[in-house]
Length: 168
Image 1 (cartoon, rainbow, N blue to C red):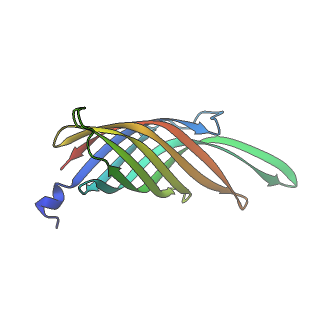
Image 2 (tube, rainbow, N blue to C red):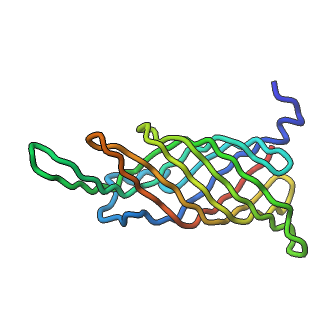
Image 3 (cartoon, rainbow, N blue to C red):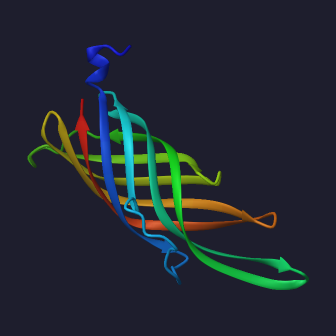
């Protein structure tokens, strides 16, 4: 079991993402679930390092090509992609004179639930109005790789992220 000191180092985080896909989206997603462009994470926090697991779902524009029946083909889709990532975040010392605003950088690696490799990196600021709640805003980019006919293609997303953490 975790000690009470270990429990004080756990946090639950919910965040949203307002990102754009590269290549550009040319069609909408085929579904519209409530958990689109969202992520939920559990982090274990040290003094300045956080490690955790994050589950999220967002649409990735996918443009890929190949040959079918001897003819070249090209496909485009905007697949709502669930993913699970192992995350690391470094929180810098709070900025002096600005009320406890703390810069951070983060990186994550893992997989979509289709078993396609995925990576994410970001930077931003956090604000902790009390010892149990932390708000964040920042920018992030992600890279998803996926196969088609023994070739690998990529889709990227970049934009704003924002969220709240509850520390236990």
